Image (cartoon, rainbow, N blue to C red):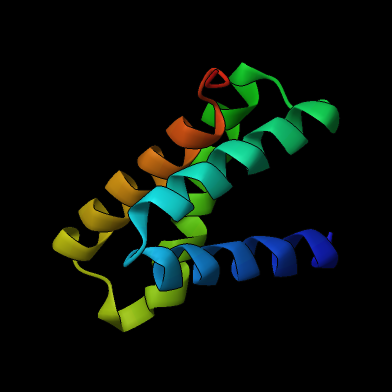
Length: 90
């Protein structure tokens, strides 16, 4: 489980870093989603991971947590999960 936590942490850091290159970010997230299909991830799993992921972000923010920051993170996570769960592009 710790390796999965580290992988998620690394992915979130990569996403933040890649925000200046949105086309590459979108392609990378779609590819990540395709790989997850190979791991057995299904569409309904994305809704399951959203609440604990957002709770972990809120915990990490700690005293720095505000409604505005949480809303921004919710939007970002929804975008990430949506791109990962998108239908493959031709």
